[in-house]
Length: 256
Ligand SMILES: C[S@@+](CC[C@H](N)C(=O)[O-])C[C@H]1O[C@@H](n2cnc3c(N)ncnc32)[C@H](O)[C@@H]1O
Image (tube, rainbow, N blue to C red; front, top):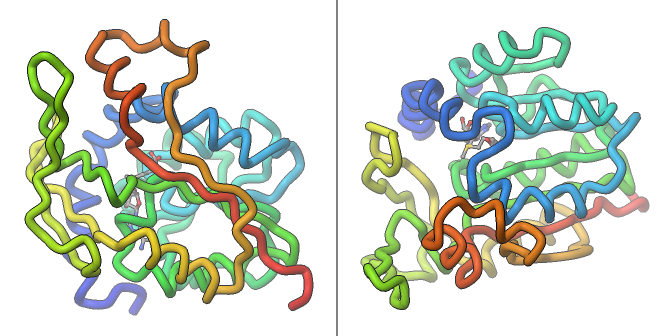
């Protein structure tokens, strides 16, 4: 069996929201991706033309399609068959599998040049197994670009005051405890969101224990050249004043 019982609710959740997720990210990624994190993602990924790239937790595939257009040889995997159904329909020429990041059972060892996990690590129930599986399928010297919701600034628990000067985070759980969280629906979603909180040091340890070297790290924020793309003053202020995400570029040692 690919999924443990513990993950069934996660799979059900992502299957349930797959259609709404596709509306959220569309073809270009949502506001946060476009304004803040995608520029960091592309900088960390570098030139992808001709590279074998795994889009791990690809959702409905906006990034897989962008990678494909840039000349990468793309494989997309996702734990949700509904996500994969939508992604495959939009781009029949990209290889997609229903698979879990924590096993990558459909993928061979030492194969990929690059893995991108865009807003996935906080959603995967087993971080340590996921990082080990990423390391296994990367070729020696290959890189993983992982971007995930910043664990210190939980967006689902943020309240921004009307004057936009005060942001409060509703921390009703201990930062240092690894725990499963369920947050109320946001935006146009109608379902609660399941995610997994871990401290930054837990992430760091999981990267190192899986055999990765940390090459680079960034807390994506809007840069001046993109100010005009923020449709509202509120969005601009949010992007200027707090990180939604954190991004790491990791490499697999060449001595394996
Ligand atoms: C926040 S969405 C991001 C999707 C896509 N990367 C994007 O940027 O639009 C998280 C995705 O991770 C997938 N996911 C969660 N846990 C997973 C796991 N263990 N293995 C594979 N996919 C997983 C979900 O089904 C969902 O599609």
